[in-house]
Structure formats: C-alpha cells, structure tokens
Image (cartoon, rainbow, N blue to C red; front, side):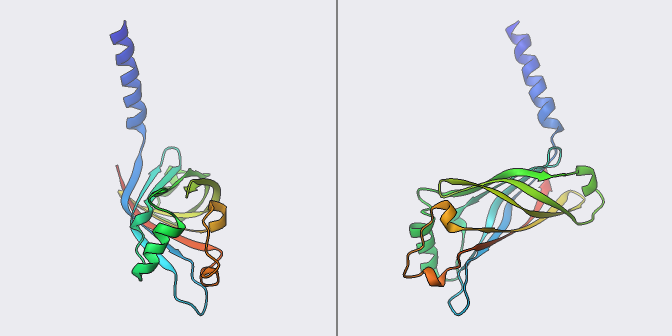
Amino acid sequence: MKNLTLLITVTLFLLVNLQRERFLTRTGQVQFNASVPSFEPVEAINNNATIVLDVKSGELAALVLLRGFKFPIALMEEHFNENYVESDTYPKAVLKGTLAEFSSTALDDALLHEYTFNGTIELHGKKELLEFPVNLIQSGEQVKLTANFTLLPERFNIEIPSIVSNKIADEINVSVNAVLEKR
C-alpha cells in the first residue's frame, strides 16, 4: 500500500511538472542608474541574472547576485558592496510575481506584448511590492524580455551617507534585458 501511494504521488508530481513550460536564462542583463546631473555617473551592470518565466501560469521570477554588478570605477563597486547593499550579509535580490492577464497563446504570434508585473522584490533584507510593465516577444524557442522600474533605496533601509547623498539619485532606475530559452 505504501509503495502504491508513493508511486501515485511521484506520478502526479511528474505530470504536473512535465506540463509546465518554462523559459529560462542565467545570463540576463540588469542595469541600474543612480546618476544625478553634474556629477560622476553612478551606474552598474550585471550580466548574470537568472530569470524564469512559466508560460502556463504567467509566473516570473529573477535572482541577481549583488556582487555581480560591475561599475566603471572599482571604488564605487567596493562602496556599493560594503557600505550600501552590504552584499556579504544580503548577497542577492529576488523578484517574484505574476504577469497580469498573461496569455501563453498570445506569445505565439511573434509580436510585442506588454504585461504588468505584480509581485515583490526582496533586497537588503526588506520585501517590497512592485508593479511595472514587462515586454515580451517570442521567437521560436526564445522569449525576449525587457522591463524598466524604479527603486527607492530608503524603502530597503539602504542608507546613503550625507557626504555623497547629493551625488546619488533618490530614485534608482533599473532596466532588465534578457533572452530566455525554452526548457
């Protein structure tokens, strides 16, 4: 009886997971810009974001290792990791949510589709609700994803020292570009 129950459980698990259709990348690009006019640009890029789209449910998730952000100036990168995001204590940013009114069949037409992401981002030990547009285009076994949104450092208890606060924007502009492969 135990073996039969185990067999049924494993079979159901496999059926549910095999029916899921996912698109994935481990090389998504996440850029942010916190520049203000008349000062040195404060921007960085990370080309190793993991992004997963479940086209059956419209669920979208992303994981970004904060030490993966590369700055044009090494000292900025050091300050970002040690003083601002404290990447030894909080090594990653995690985005989880769904695309409102998502339709996997609509993606089949190779046209640009805009959906609204509704979910959360966890950064620096804080979780915040987020809503922003996401653009998707499917081409064969790939989905191209682009998105832009804004983050406020104070909502994540990221303190900007007063000595540099006039050199860093209050709102951080984030852009995401990725090509996800069918898995």
